Structures are given as structure tokens and as C-alpha cells.
Amino acid sequence: MATPSPSTPDRAASFGLVAEDYGRLRPAPPDEAIDWMLPEHPSDVLDLAAGAGTLTALLPSRVRQVHAVEPDDRMRAVLAGRLPGADVRAGTAESIPLPDACVDGVIVASAWHWFDTGRAVPEIARVLRPGGRLGIVWNGIDRSVDWVDRWSSGLGDHGGQPAPEGRVARRGELLRAALEAPDSPFGGLEHAVFTTTRRSTPAQTTALLGTYSRVILLPEAEREAHLARALDALCAELGIGPDDAFALPFRALAWRTTRR
Ligand SMILES: C[S@@+](CC[C@H](N)C(=O)[O-])C[C@H]1O[C@@H](n2cnc3c(N)ncnc32)[C@H](O)[C@@H]1O
Image 1 (cartoon, rainbow, N blue to C red):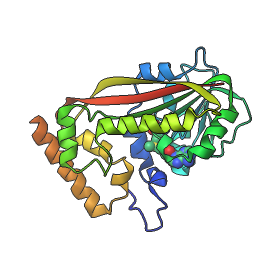
Image 2: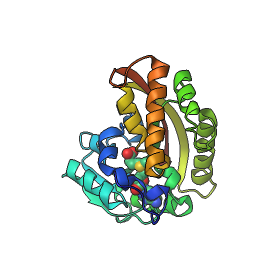
Image 3: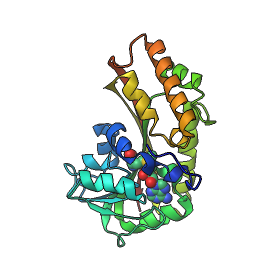
């Protein structure tokens, strides 16, 4: 992987440094979460901050036309390679390169926290048709499971964030503030949680950790030491070797709301 240079702008722009790994390693939210966020009979759907196309790849079987907007050139290149039929554009949530009222669904996966919501919310409302659906999801390793929390807390891996349940509550509060104001173009915010497990190995799980921004931006020696510590701790926690399979728990925290 390329070592982040001192000019690396910030965490939101860090993912391109690991674009190939990101596309290969990050799992999409479960099918039920995607179906819950999409409108009924979706026609045109925008995956906003689509990254390397992890979730986008699950849309062509569900919608007539997939649109994907992503600011990072390297992430977008991986996405476009995976999805030749998608309408893939450079852009941001604050400036979406699509016409007014052109989609009936917008999905944002693991990216809402990078947006300037004061500008992104009206912009998302602009491209959505009246009655269209905005779905927001964070999908990640499920730290509400005791052993996962023990393992990641032992690594100091909460990154100064509140404990998992505190973080869920905080995300809900931020979304309500951004989307439920009296003059909001959106209404009827709903929340659902989807849990699943995926077959993984400690080595694969540790590689996945390397696609998170706080790990990407560590200096190379620190990053390697952190990932080696994570691997040892995971093997010890589970009592298995680096290449032995186990069921890794994931949790998708999803919200949906409707364009008035
Ligand atoms: C954690 S990745 C999630 C990618 C993808 N949605 C997924 O689920 O795999 C966050 C993505 O948000 C993009 N991003 C960061 N700031 C953004 C902004 N203001 N508008 C749109 N995308 C942004 C990054 O380039 C990155 O690809």
C-alpha cells in the first residue's frame, strides 16, 4: 500500500490509498438492509459516496439504472471496473452532478459522517423525486458482541469514539437533527438494525481493519505493528490460527426517510 504523504488531506480522502483492498475486503450490508432502504419498485437509484462499489454492485439486479457518485479517482476507477453498466460520476454529496428530481432512491453507505450535512441534505433532496427514498447505513464488525468488543477495546480501537451503543444513539441524534427539522424536505425517519455473520479468518479480518481511515493514516511502521497486534489478539481470543475460519459478526445500522 502507498504510505500516506504529509500532504494527505484528511481521513475522508484516505480510502483511495487502499482502493483495491477496499473493494476486495469490505463486505456490503446484508440484502435485507438494502431492500429495506430502497423505495418500492425502484427505477433510478443513486449510490452516493459509492467508494469502490461495494454496495453499488448489489443494485443492478434491483433497479433499472444505477447511478454512482464518488469524489476519489482511485475508488471510482475500481467501481467503474466492476460495474460497466452504471452511470459513474465524479462528485460529492454537497455538489451532486445530476439533474433535479431524477432518481427515486439515494443510498449512502458508511459515508454520511463525512458529509457537510447543511449542504448535502438540500442537495440530496434536489436530485430525489417527490416521494423518493433516502437510505443511510453503516455496516461494520459488530462490537455489540462481547468478544468483539473485548478484542477491539484491547487494541484501543475505539479511536476516542463513544462505546458502540453510545455511538448508535449519537448517530440517530445527528440524523434526526439533520433530517427532521420542521422545514426539512424529508419526513418519517425510521431505523432498523440488521445482523449477520460472514465466514472469515483472523488474517482476513485483520486485513479488513486496514481499510479503516484511522488505520490507513497511521505511519507505516505503526500500522504494521497495530495490525500484527490485532492478528495475535484475535487468534488468542478465538483460540485459532491466522488462517482458520470462524463466523465474524457484522451489524448494519440503517435509517430511511422519504422526500416530501
Ligand atoms: C468508508 S467509504 C464508503 C464507501 C462505500 N459507500 C461503501 O460502503 O463501501 C467513504 C467514501 O466516502 C467518500 N467521501 C468522502 N467525503 C465525501 C463527500 N463529501 N461526498 C461524497 N463522498 C465522500 C470517500 O471518498 C469514500 O469513498
